[in-house]
Length: 318
Image 1 (tube, rainbow, N blue to C red):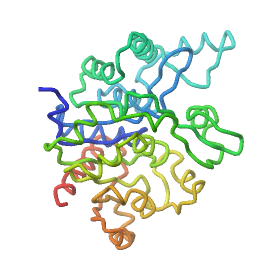
Image 2 (tube, helix red, strand yellow; image 1 turned 60 degrees about the horizontal axis):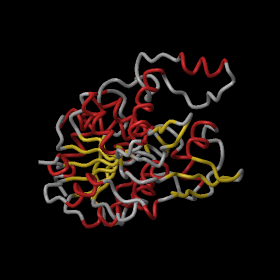
Image 3 (cartoon, helix red, strand yellow; image 1 turned 180 degrees about the vertical axis):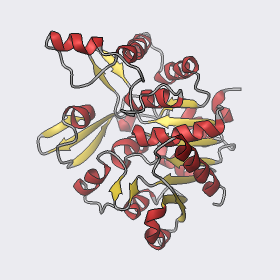
């Protein structure tokens, strides 16, 4: 039986926040019954290599090999390659560790030979000992572009090189009109076995929207038999980490869990917010959504597993 036919629980993930909840879910399932679809809007070419930051963050996090201090990259990494690049005047704004580099080299080689990103990612999962299924949201080209007062920037230029300094005027997802859900993700969403879909507490605009922009993806979410829920990335009127709050302000949203719930309301059934934001329950319920409370700030493995348990328990009440 193909692994995608086994999926009962699906997570849509991007960035570090998504990977944290995915890790909690991985500890509960540790099997192909869990699928995590990673954002590929961040993917780009650098030094001639195909880089998939969000997929790699999932791979490193779920295998227990990620750097706990940075939240990205590999633990105990060395940086001889970047040091050599600096010595010869090469670009160093996007850091590639020596061991991390092997992943990008191998991915690029196999892509150039015609292999799909899904297949490559699956084989990496096996090599890293990840039991759950990490899949790209799409195997097709999809690029997040950020419109700013300085012009249109590639995502990594905005996010890493410029450190999110520019105001976002609008976001574009180049190629989305021709991008389709990866085969495994599409089949999982159509499966009668699927019980739950969770949108991780990722940045709604930079991490989740590139997934939702994939042709037919949002319609599949609306039609799937599973309960679809989202976890708020906002706690007490601010983002737990990253530029989410600033992005919301730039795009004309009030920074609140209610704003996120309303943004997702046409395709989710339930919404989980932090216990500190209990005052927003009534407003969110007015959207026709069921609301759950949980401790959504994940500071260690125990809190990640606890939130994953709360997410599953809440989904079973819908």
